Length: 140
View (tube, rainbow, N blue to C red):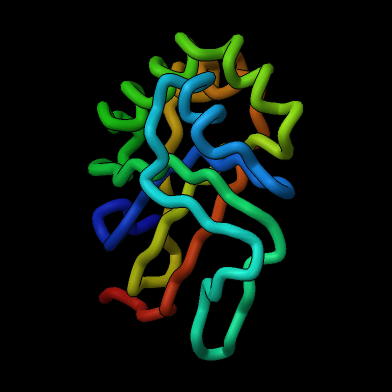
């Protein structure tokens, strides 16, 4: 049994990670403004203290539906399809990847990716990190 309705938070991010990233040039190539930028040496976590080892250009989109029919995800993937050439160009600056992050208070959670979403992800040609955090409560 999975708890698709027990997901508290889900997001999909496009990440560009590297040294001395030209943030404005990346934004221009992708026709997107980052939701966050991180520079090498920035404090990214206070306790325990963690320092960014590289620059990061991040475009993060909060998702709405863990059942796999998330229109926000579909729109972001469509946008990435339209800038595939820019994505290829940005790869010269560093690592480019997608990250799906899912968080829940409950154990046995799942995030469903529909076949058409998987096709879209594959056609974009970027690695997909899947990050899940579960605090482990058991729902009865």
